[in-house]
Amino acid sequence: MNQKEATLLAKGHPFDIARMIESAPSKRQFELLDQLPIDRLNDVVIELSDNFVLNYLDRLNEPKKKELLNALEMDEIRNLLDDIDAKEVQKILALLDTPKRQKAIHLLAYDEDVAGSIMNTDFIAIQETTSVPEATDALVKNVSDSDFIDQIFVVDHTQKYIGSIELKNLISARKGDALASIIERDQTVIHELDTIASAIQKLRDYNDTVMPVVDEGQHLIGIITADDVLDTMIDEYEEDVEQFVAVGDFEEDSSAFTRTKQRIPWLLASIVLNLVIAAFLSFFQDTIEQITALILFQPMILGMAGNIGTQAISVTILGLHQEKINEADEVKKHVRNEVMIGLTNSFLIGVFGFIIAFIFLSVVTMGEQSAVQLAAVVGLSLFGGMFVSAICGVFIPIFLDKMKVDPAVASGPIISTINDLFALLIYFAIATSLLL
Image 1 (cartoon, rainbow, N blue to C red):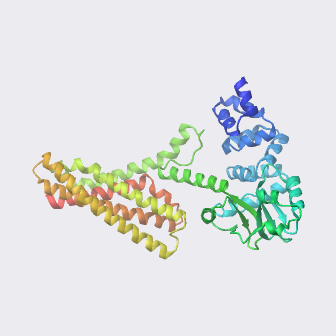
Image 2 (cartoon, rainbow, N blue to C red):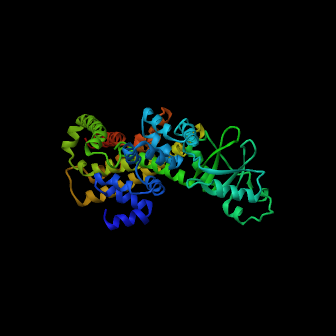
Image 3 (cartoon, one colour):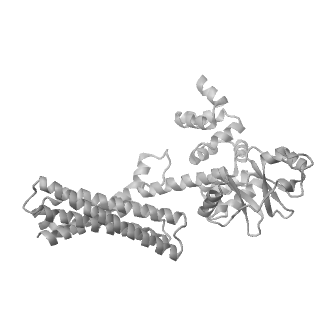
């Protein structure tokens, strides 16, 4: 180990250490991790990918593995357990101390789309009857490195949530002050079975960095912090982007062959659909042969239809994920608004396309057809293709959502090809009708 590596391991930020380890030769990565004391190792492991951590755990002896697992925060343990099969889950659970094991089992019982699945159980709670000196003493004695202490949560003797105290207010409180005087009551809470989207919305609406999670009986069972929400949003964003371009789930260290297997089915499906397009276009062979000028404007027709379809799909998927268009009235309002937007934009682009095409064809002579006729074909095709694409962009995600299919899938290559199919059919059908 060179001096630079030794210095970074001893004094560097955990993120920088993790990046150094990931960039090191594979045979040295675990050796570098072995140089870290357990408290530093815990901080660095959090910055590494789950697969990397699982591979590292596999090579440790049982005492070392147990020590590391019990030093990790609950949300990190939960992430690790999400990535392995049931048999491996039981092996890791058996290595956890009893309190931590019970918490992990409880978290795993939640569906992945409810707030309880992302809550953090590392927090400080005190009884409402506690005095200020007792609360301060309990905080000093009981806090662990993984506990969230920016706010201390207050419960009654049955563990029902009452309110919270900011750490700065507890520290500044005088010995004789009543604890009740610094408790913030009537706070908004997140229920364990709330959707993750609604939990995120509550944190945004109230501009809080942390919110308590309660069960049906209002008992305090966990917290959700802004960090938890940010991690969840990042994961969902990455998943949506992967689906948007149909690349599938993968880890950074996946082989090229693995990534190829994940992507090739979508590309093959696109080839099949493009063959369908070619079959349909064969009906317009005479039109294409006689009016070669149509080829010049084909990219514009396809591009604009794809653009407006992508806009409609993106807005609709966002609304579905944020649960803004779940109810029947909300769906009707969204569809009405998006159809009107699509109609207006399609009409305006169609008019603009007609003008641009007419000016171009007035300067550049292309065949025997008049510039006005060809420009009219372009304008009408832009209007028709874009409007149909906008409607598809609105209805397809809603349909998939009703069928319990992730609507982000609708934005992949398959839908792009469908948009191309409609745009080209409209284009050449109008050209055949007006020019032949």
